[in-house]
Image (cartoon, rainbow, N blue to C red; front, top):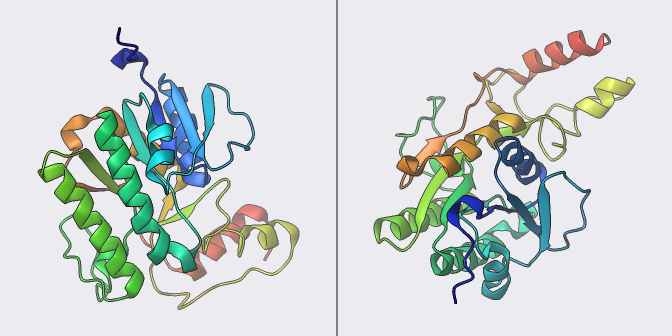
Length: 249
């Protein structure tokens, strides 16, 4: 006798419990979906409406356990910068195999790295992928594999690309721990790079809303989408906004 969960009750399963994965889990609950949040330890704080699952999705067995019975799988896994070239392809291989076996749809939280240097041109969903850095080439290769898996009928995939995150819980960002703790306490605020060069940031709530929408819209499968992102501004201007908001230089 089949024990498959009816599609209407099948969970939306989020892989990765960092700021994006956690925000997405909350957004999916808000939209009325049953939600599972998967990471290696399942040790984070309780989130109402979210079932936490412990699984190592860098292995096929772990990924299969993590996505079992899912209607939609959201890949929000990330690892330390120095490990990405080694680990992220392994995670991709395991997740694709698990999602293919489960029959779920796959939504991937993606980055802008595949575009490489644009010479100041605005990045769009039609921009060419010209990455030359090791990490950029790796990200482009991953995305080519995702889209190839979709074209071949192996897995239904949509990619949602985000700029640097900003918002609650976001620390590992140029608008994270380097800025807000110091701004709120009167301490140092650190700026990196050319502070007058326009730079885009994506609010973590918009990352969550965009990914959730892709999960609800199968007609968006098979391509890259840009998640809702604020217009680019320079770091100097952003710091001035922060100063005005907190009431101190």
